[in-house]
Length: 140
Image (cartoon, rainbow, N blue to C red; front, side, top):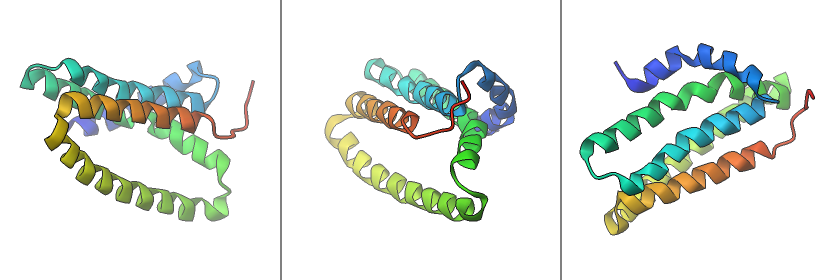
């Protein structure tokens, strides 16, 4: 059984935790930041077991933000264009992932995972913070 699959199975449970946050944007920001922060620990990893455990935990936590992210997109984009916009976002994300994998692999060869993955984690947390800045109808 794959770790992300188990995370997806529990995503409805995690969706129920969203009520503890001021908005779904705050929840998505928190969940994605926590997943990415795990990779800061790679700077101190000294064994394959710790490396695999960190990677598996991040993969398990990855789907946690899914339902809240869907709620954000439903509120931001009108029904008429949401599918096209989300398709474009997925396509752009896939292209960016391929580019990051290529260049990240080159960086791993040069600097090793103890430097590259924590730097990538910081970039991911910064991306989560940028996401938090999007205009969203607040329900305070």
